Structures are given as C-alpha cells and as structure tokens.
Image 1: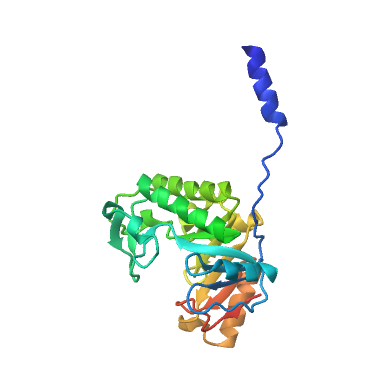
Image 2: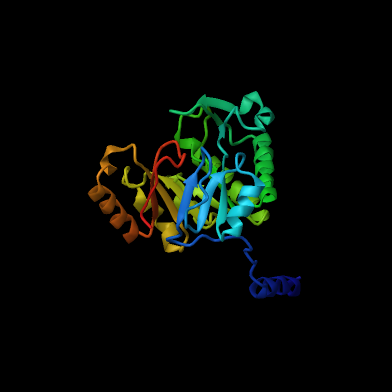
Length: 261
C-alpha cells in the first residue's frame, strides 16, 4: 500500500504539465468591441470582441485571415428573449429585470441553465471563435430575484471557465470585480466597463500581474471624456496600468471609437 502511494505521488510530481492549447491574450493587447450594427472589420487590432449569435462563420474566417483573434460575446447570466435559443429557458430560471436593460437575471444554480451554456460554448467552438466573453456573471450582487450567494457565483463562473477550456476556448471574466482574486487563475483575461469612472481599476491588477489582458471600455456618453485633454489624461492613466482602454458609445455599434493604443 505504501509503495502504491509513493508511486502515485512520484507520478504527480513528474507528470507533464497540461498544455493549455487555447489563446492567451496578454496585457496591453489591442482590441475592438462591437456588438451591434454592421461590423467594421477595418481596425488594426489584435482581437475583436463580437456577438456570438449575430456574427457569422464567414465573418470570423475573414477576421482570422486578417490575423485577428475573435472573442465571441454572449450573456451567461441573463435571459434575452430575442436569442435563437430563448425557448430553452424554463420560466423558473427567469428572475427580475436587469436595471436599465430589457433582460432578466437568471438562476445560476439551475442545472438546466448550465446545459444551455454548454450549447452556447459549443456554438462558439463550431463558429471558430478563439474565446468567449460570458456577460452578467455577478448576479449575486444585483437584485436578481434569487437568494444567490458569493460561493454560488464563484462555482458558476468556474463552471463557465472549465467549459470554455474543455473546448479549447479562452474566456474573459466580465466585471465581477469583487471576485477577481478568486477567479484570476481560472480566467484568461478580463473585460471591464468603466473601471476608471468608478475608480475600480486597481481591482483588476491581479490580471495584469499575471500578464493577462484587461480590456476596458469607458463610455463617451459620460461628459468627462468630451475634450481631447480629458481623453489624453485617461489614456495616460490607463497605459501606465497596462489596461487596454477604448472610449465607445453605450450601444457598442461603432458609431464612435477612440482608442488609447
């Protein structure tokens, strides 16, 4: 018995490291984020973040042909009644309406929801996406309609990361700043909205320290960014922190874009 235990321990010590054969966006990666409107393919960036359902395989192939990586966006924590798989969501997993959006929070504890998210991950794989941006993964700090706890959110987010990696996809942690330290080892990059506006960029430092990209969007609708001096000040601050920052419209429709790259 002792020999068997020693043999197992020796194998664990000398086992070859598991190859992470998916894309790893590095700190200071340049990017474009567009989820609405006719996709502008003309930006000279490292990666595009686009809508999973609305972006065709052909478009993804064109981006790849041009040397760009493609991250595919979907909501992992809210119900959108216009999506092609909307009929798969049972009524009992739908919660309260999200503040400011025509979407409903989802009960992340429900196993049927996990099955739907596996299908979405598989769709991303089949379309040729290099990775995914799973949105709305912080229901536990919002009025979701469900008594969600931090540990349940952690478990769900780790589930999403595992499902992505199982398919050779990288995955970005969207917002959820209170759990960055617990999740940075599971996620390959971060996508954040308005960390400068809300003075929260410091919370993303674990990703930068691990040389993982932090892709941040500030919104031009905020009057503080109207002047060129304000834009320059923002970019100087973001570059110092190695946070890849864009100024964009709330609609994410490419009607305006200002890059700090």
